[in-house]
Image 1 (cartoon, rainbow, N blue to C red):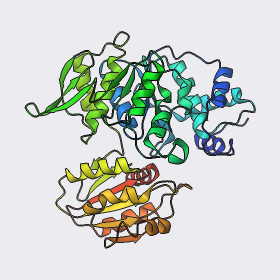
Image 2 (cartoon, rainbow, N blue to C red):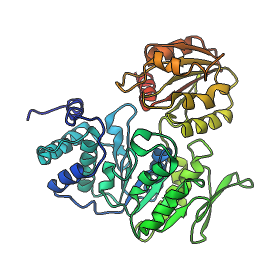
Image 3 (cartoon, rainbow, N blue to C red):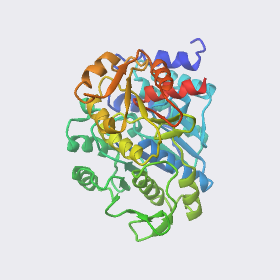
Length: 423
């Protein structure tokens, strides 16, 4: 087979399976077996949930690295470069390493059709097995039970939250979604739940599987400490730690941090974690596109809020953000999203809307987006723009010093905005 560039590999992978998405573990397990099913040789934490997965992974990674451990993290989707999905020791892997891993997966694949995500997951696991890290952290792509990362039996599994998203695949009720997310739990291994009001079905399923459950608001505590300005983490064994507020913005990050710390504490026999490393990690953890504030004459805020739960959190963060001027929103989502429910929480906070679509083939066309938001944005200033750069340019041209440019919605909207900044 001729040598491929990374972009050529990725384009080719998207043609391998007749469906962009096909949940199930049979194909990926078959190819993993033909790769030799190499042992990862270290503890594994799998992180699922509707929102907060990426933040939780970033917090686990930062705390573990602050303790001197070598980490390997697999996340999705990416914002600008595919390489963002695969990090070893905090660094994104090179094009060359990815291409070599893809070549090994292709050599083992035979006639098995793999989806783009399955191909990438196997390549990441192959790289991690060879790297010999101290800790592997895997982010679920969609759901949990049938997601490719569930190929690996995690030593600890975290479900950060349950909300409405991917309902065509996961079910249209909280209980149905919870059952899919709970598929990453394993008998006898810790199941961490980061949402105090998660559907009871999630906890019940973990208990049914025989997994010891640790839930924020029950076995775990995460409370602000007015006196110190920080917060108090409480473990299931009664351990209490006074900690600094995470560097990542938003009240919900306390729940993500509490879950991340609980996951690491569950592995303390193999990966002891000094308190100073916990504090340092909370201060170092960063994640692009999650209420990411870029200061300037016009402040940019970028957020991948693309479902109702995430949009409500974004609105809460925006209310607490002091912006002296007007707020203009560049907004777009993928075609399968609840655009009305993602726009509604922000309407009272936004002065003008710039509706657009990314270059992603799955994006909701801007004209259709505008039509779907007709009632939600009734009376609000709004306009349709053909591309993300055009929408950003128009919003900036209308802005004055002190104004705020909010770019939110799908990963591809935020990714194109970040790419524009890099250029």
